[in-house]
Image (cartoon, rainbow, N blue to C red; front, side, top):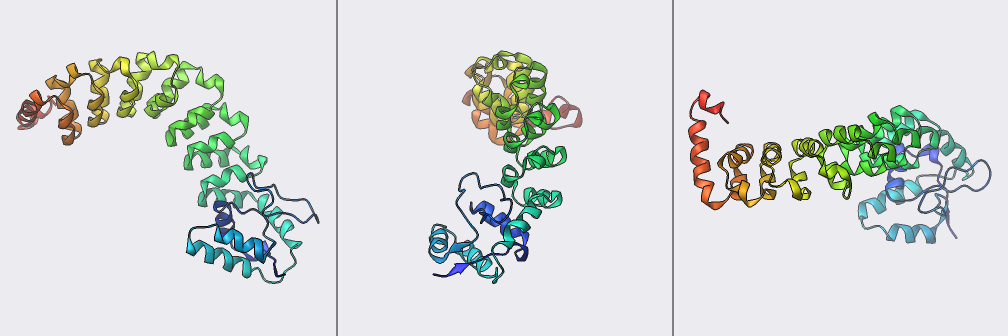
Length: 287
């Protein structure tokens, strides 16, 4: 039976990122301290039989990735497999390499050691790359306002991983809604959806947040704020507001295609009035 031994010291860093993406993770043979197991496949190994390797490669859809993985394994040479764990250990404890891994593949943040997931600089970098990485950061960073807001700016769903003390804090929620109004879509069945100031801030940064805010779809100030950010938010407004010229003008100015969401009876009037106000510099100020 053929055995392929992979010496990690001879494989470029991109291969580790490839293996992480393909969910292949190194396993230790017991000669020294083992690296952390892969969270999904603890029995995967770089030292593998030809049978298991073939099965693994056949399970992948991309012919290019199959060839690249096979080439990397075969290029491992005849170095002893026992040398791999120590080299891997050195890489695992290398801060620069940890940053490189996150830069190449943001999802690899969850595979870093606890020490690096507690490193503020690495945590900040990881959540900037992908807000969902907040869930893998150490607890103290999920209570940190600055870190959580960075994550929310990238991905509104990161609000789910914030500490309860932050999710119950009105000032924090107001700040989060100002940065990314989509957070309100992740906070259903909470009192914040009834808070007019928070709703106004949310639609001002993400007009489509109006879709879930049924009680405010007939509020002219909030609908105008949403349409100012995204003209297509007018589609969620009440029929009454879709018949108002000033509201339609706001949406039309932001996006000409938003005219289709105005009531049919006012579409021509909206185009005429927009053209009239846009005819001179003084008139344009009215818009």
